[in-house]
Length: 475
Image (tube, rainbow, N blue to C red; front, side):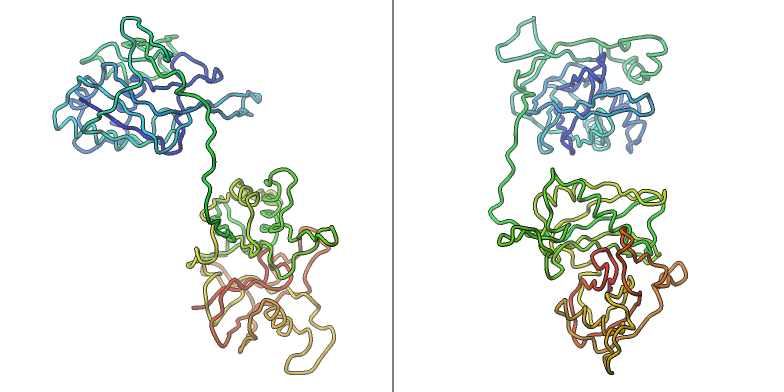
């Protein structure tokens, strides 16, 4: 007996049956043996598993050439719709079988036998399979030693159709021996040139399957007895040309705009908009204490370009916020600059990301983006040692508003230091909101030291919710 189990890691099996057009919305379930044997041949040539030679491959194909039985898990049919803009906007359907990623399709040949070496070689081919059907049908396949369950899909014998069953026609090989491998290797493009509809050496076999095997079903979400507060969303950035760190503020604002567009309907987001509903006054009011989302873009390899984005909202993201965060994929930048891809790599709270620099503890912190003054530095005068409204005094006031202690040392620095390019001066940073009338009153950078370790993030001053005024720990 030969038994093979197969799982689809993304829960999708994409395969249009032979002879059908993609827009017919027909799926192949169970899969055809012809497709499976061609996949084994492709895997043999593509991955060249160790010690698997062509004679062994031929013996494996011969052993599997007879019609298998199947044990099929319940599934459903789903589709997505696409438009081919390169071909006059032609619409096509991508129909697929939707399965639970943990469910297994079992292929079963009850009377087939293979020698020990050929079984080992078949196991190697299955481990290297990777995909089955279209390239996005990621799979894992494994050779089983035994399988005791009853099959629920098998060839129809003598035209006997059972109650509660439906039929499907599958493509199988019609021959064994020398010609089988050669016929499986014939390319589809070659057949099209020859105007050939059916592959040489193939046959159609009628299979039966449970009539409700592809019934649509609704899966109730798993209810958690204790919900976890989600305050942090972590993204990796990818682009042909990543944004310079000097463009932190416009990039972060664009991300906020894209995420807000992804929210369901017209629902209002306290985390992203920074306002909460006042029941007494019956109106929206600004959220106090900087509890709404901070979009903190960082250059963590110190090459002068942004490579990560951490969105931190002390007020907590709600379910609509999380759905919007999960949907963002691409940010189109201004002035025809290359778009930036966002890859969500984690959700949680600050305790779940101890390795991220902005959440660490340290005595010494250094500006990673300029501190944009809330007020003009020359207004008012004042007396030493804290002249009113000078940059250092505004820095101390902002730290106090975040519940942080007054630094024991404050040193001005000229710009952002990188490992691969000259120093980037603070005046090179974009400091205006996308609405041009909103901007700070001057840009400064500091290295500050506290008497004891303090925990980040530290983002203060004008534009602190879009990356300005960000400090990183010096350890």
